[in-house]
Amino acid sequence: MKRFIFSVVTLVILLSGSLSHTAYSQTANGSKVSARAHAGVTLALPLKDGSVKFAVIGDTGTGTSKQHDVAETMVRYRAAFPYEFALLLGDNMYGSEDAADFEKKFSDPYKQLLAQNVKFYAALGNHDQALQTNYVNFNMDGKEYYRFKKGNVAFYALNSNYMDKKQVQWLNDELAKDTSEWKVAFMHHPPYSSGGKHGSDKQLREVIEPIFVKYGVNVVLTGHDHFYERIIPQKGIYYFVSGAGGKLRSGDIKKGTGLTAKGYDRDMSFMLFEVVNGKQMHFQAISRTGETIDSGVLLHQKAKQ
Image (cartoon, rainbow, N blue to C red; front, side, top):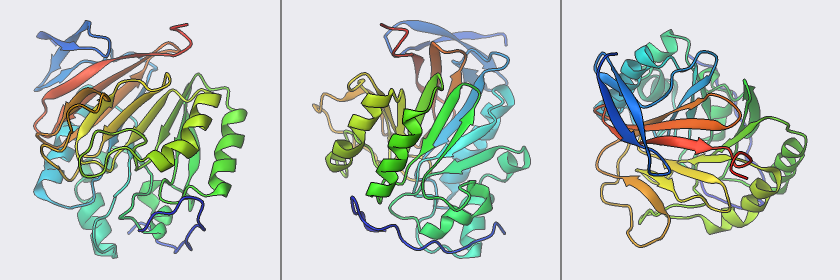
C-alpha cells in the first residue's frame, strides 16, 4: 500500500472472519524493579488486580515458524500475566490476503490466544489492504481509524498510511473531549525511530505530534522497523517501536541518532503493558525465546509535574 499524507482513503471491501525466584530488571529511569519467575517466564510487571493488562506486537503477518515461536511465548506469558487484549501495529499480512492467508498468517499462529478470548485490535500497515478493516478477528468494525477504551485507558488506532484531513479532524475532535487518565495511540509508521531501513517518519510527525502534545497523548506505539526500540521521551511523550513480531531486520538500529533509550535487533519480540493507576504504566519487552530485553515504569506526565 503506497503512502500519501492528506490523500483519499481507499475503498473498503468486506471480509468476514473465516513465584518463588526473584530477579531484577532495568526500568525506564535506570532504577531496578523486582521480577518474579512463573513457570518458565520472568515477569517484571506488578500483576495487580483490576489493572489494564495488554500485549503489543507489530509486523506479524508472515506465517513463519518464528512467528509461531513468538506466539507460543505470548501464550506462556499469558499464563502468568492474563492480558485481556493485544494491539497489532500493522503489516498484519505480507503478500496475498486470501482467506487461507488470514488463517496461515493470523488465526493459526494465535489460535491458542484466540481460544482464550484474547481480542486483537489492529492498525493498518503499508503491506495491508483496506479490506482488513472488516476481518472479524481484527476488531476494527470497518474503520481504518478508531477509538476504544479499557478501564482508565483510551486507545487510538490510526491509519498512518493515509493521514488525510478527515482523520486528522477526527483525532482532534476525539482527543479534545477525552477525559481518560491515559491516552495511547498506536499505528504502523514511527514518528521517531533509529531504523537504518526506514527510520523516523518526519512528514507524519509534523502532522500528528502537535496534536499529541496539545491533547496530552501519553504513549505512542509503532512498528514498521523490524526491531524493538524505546525512544528517549520526545516533547514529554513516550514512543516505542515494536515491529519484530513476524520479521527481524538484524543490526538495523543506527547508532548516534540520539533517540535510543534501549534497542534490541537480535531477535524477534513483543511487549506487555500494565496500567495500575493514573500515575504508572509498566512495560516489559520480551524476545522470541522469552528473554526480557527491556522493562520499566512510565510515570504519567502529570505525575511528574
